[in-house]
Length: 101
Image (cartoon, rainbow, N blue to C red; front, side, top):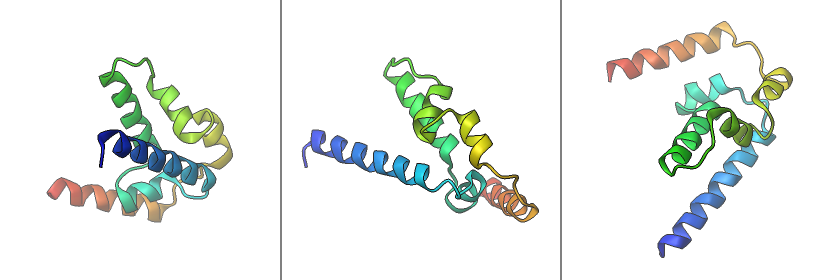
């Protein structure tokens, strides 16, 4: 496959992932971290880092707006719930497992 086709497909898949996450606001970041070891904020950090590597002026907050589809403060107010004790315990257990690896 040509490199340009590969980049185009990767970009399309990434856009679909963002759309999916934006449509599924019921999925909390802590749940993503426990299950997949990344969350929306991780995606924003990776996006900002990729921009910096290419000398493109996009900071973390701008990247979060791209990932969340709105300013993070707005998303947080509308959709973020307090993490439950069970979610926090699962996250802590995951972090301990990672530290042992």
